[in-house]
Amino acid sequence: MKKIEHIGIAVANLEQANKLYSTILNSKPYRIETVESEGVITSFFKCKDTNIELLQGIDEKSAISKFIKKRGEGVHHLAFEVDDIVSEIKRLKELGFEIINEKPKKGAGNKLICFIHPKSTNHVLIELCQKIK
Ligand code: ZN
Image (cartoon, rainbow, N blue to C red; front, side, top):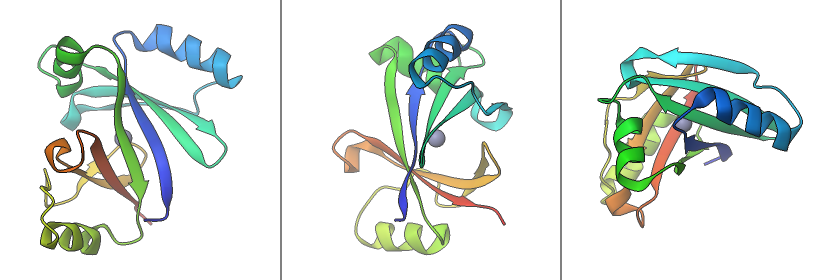
């Protein structure tokens, strides 16, 4: 693991949350992107080496909408950057972690991503991400 690439925060209203985080961080989001496959609209803010990802569900079926319904808005996942996502998935799987998608998928910001199930990580959803070169 290289660093915490971003912290994902589930929000009910992205427009409002963008204003709030623009005020807190004193900068505008550097990217706003819809990821259809994940059912989310995301916005990213820079905070030195770590980014903040705000996520709003596209509709009620979205995992983010379900998360908010169940647990309310708040921290949704931690994303660690890795150099080789395939070997990290293999390593963690062999150690007994439950990988949600063993085949990495394309996420926001031209990255390959996978998630580790919170039940094997003290109820914190962990994302691994690797930049696509
Ligand atoms: Zn993320």
